[in-house]
Length: 194
Image 1 (tube, rainbow, N blue to C red):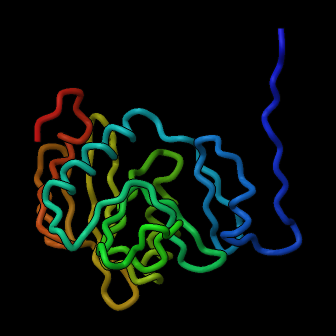
Image 2 (cartoon, rainbow, N blue to C red; image 1 turned 90 degrees about the vertical axis):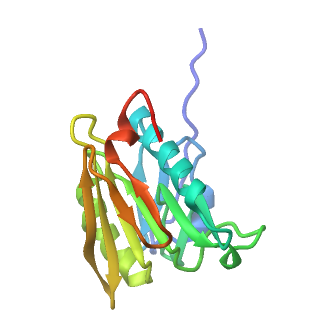
C-alpha cells in the first residue's frame, strides 16, 4: 500500500500577500482569495451550491443582452491585495479581453451563493468590499432547500441598500443589469422548471 501526501506550499509571511502570490497555491478545488493581503480559503462547493449556480447561470444567460457576459467563478482583482472569486458575475463584454486572467474592472453584478460557513462574511465584509469597488448590483442567494431566498442590493454612492428580495415561490424581478426573473425555489428543487 502506498500513501500520498498533499503537496505543501509556502507563502510569504513577512508582508501582505498579493495576487501574484496566489500562483503558489495548490489547484485543489478550494478558493483562495485575499482580504487586504490576508489569505481566505474556502472549501470546494457542495452539490446544492453547484445546482443553484448552474441554474442561475442558465437563467441569466438566456436573458443576457449581447453587450454583457455571464461568467461563473472568475477572479475579481480589486487591487494587488484585494481579490475575490464570486460565484457568478455579469460583466460588460468590452471590459474583458480574451487573454485577461482576472476581471479588473467592477462587474455589473456579483452573485454569491451563501453557505452556512460564508453567510455572515457574504453579508458583511464581502458586501463592503464589493461596494467600495463600485459594483452596481450584488445578490446573495441562500440555497436552503426548505426556504431558499435571494436578496438583491443596489449601490447608492458607496454603500448598498436592499433593492429587493424573494423567498420560496416568490418571483424576484431584476432590472439591473438587465431584466430577468428568478424564483428561488426553482433554483434548489430536484426537478427544475424554468
